[in-house]
Amino acid sequence: MAKAPPAPPPTVKEVFGVLESVIDPELGDNIVALGMVPSVEVTKSGVVTIEIKLTIKGCPLRAEIKKEIETRVNLHPGVTGIKITWGEMNADERSEVMTKARWNARSTAPDTEVPSSCQVLAIASGKGGVGKSSVTVSLATAIAAKGHTVGVLDADIWGFSIPRLLGITDRMEAQPISGSDRPKIIPNERVVGSGVLKVVSTGFLVEEDTALMWRGLMLTKAVEQFLRDVHWGDLDYLLIDMPPGT
Image 1 (spheres, rainbow, N blue to C red):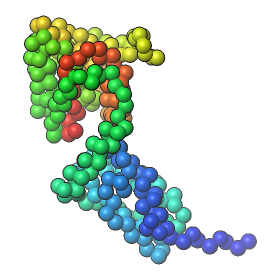
Image 2 (image 1 turned 90 degrees about the vertical axis):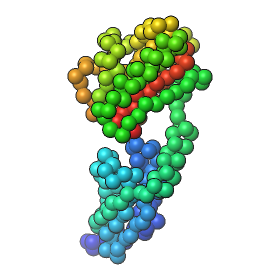
Image 3 (image 1 turned 120 degrees about the horizontal axis):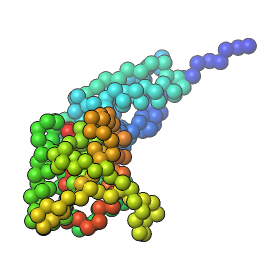
Image 4 (image 1 turned 180 degrees about the vertical axis):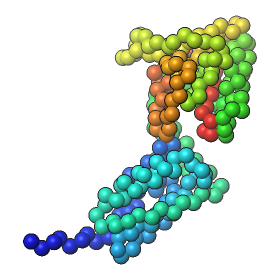
């Protein structure tokens, strides 16, 4: 029986089509639409060379993106090898991709229990251990002391410290809420002066010394769930203690 001839190498267009199925887990869109693939080359022998530009040189998701590219491209008929070259976006390219990511986030954002009149403040830093959580607690406490109802969302899933800083150890529980088709998580509350803090943290769900190593979509989904499935009630302000580097 005659052996089937080898498949011809893919076209550049076909490779770009495959890469459109590779999603950047942090930015939430495919790497082609985000402008992360400046060029693709294919040799006659089927070796595919792909240039990838990351938002930052030390992107922690590089290995995950690399694995996804190799897995998907290798499945295409005619591919005999893959080479990936890595680069870093310049300031203009980074600004453009972040604009796209913010637009995508707004257009796909889930409905939340956060009141539309609530003012949302995100406290962020480029690295951990600089006192970001302490700033969040101090700011939230000062605002609540003036008579406001302040929500505090501890989005630092890996190293939650808000429960310890506030001295709150009570577990959060889900309870039936009138008008909702499913139970909602009830924040821990603390009276501060004439105001109230409503606090949500992964630390109220797991033991204090438990390390949660979540990345990309897992982290995003966890924060979305807190915003969507927590019954915040009336809020004047919501302070979000962001994970380091976000």
